[in-house]
Length: 201
Image (cartoon, rainbow, N blue to C red; front, side, top):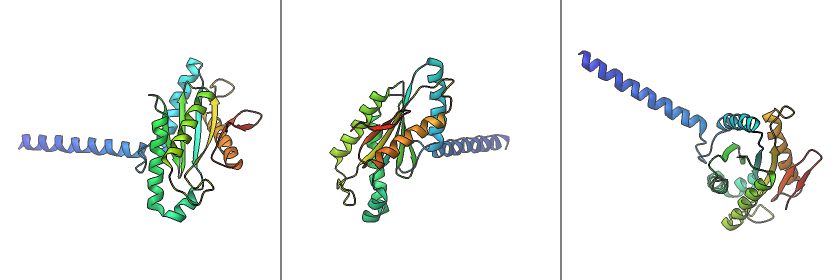
């Protein structure tokens, strides 16, 4: 009887550990795209920020938004929209492929990429590869001027130090660059600098 009770407890403990592990994965992985969630992204960028500060290195942030995505959902339906999100996520993950590069779904049709120890120029190369891969994918979008799915990308190269100690401000700078990419006509990449954001396409 004691042996049966011991076995029952071990089985229960194993089941609880497996459930906890599944919940942890679910909390950090976006179920649709397989990318990291916003929560996982925040935890990761905090670690990378502190490491860049210690090593006196920069890191680059890319904010990526699918252009005219509401119109895409309206035209093709949400199921097709989900498939498009999965395809774009796969392309971004493939092109930001170094071991420490980090790709997350920031929300809706927006993604964020962190490139540790990478300059703005290196980030522009990654952005260019992403946009060229979408040209090759040629995902039909009749609601877009290009008649295919495109993305707008904002880039910011951050230098963590005493003067720039706020991770949130770095993300906001990348988001400002994304805003200018969209305002200037979409389907382009803009880089943030303190004076202005400028297009590189």
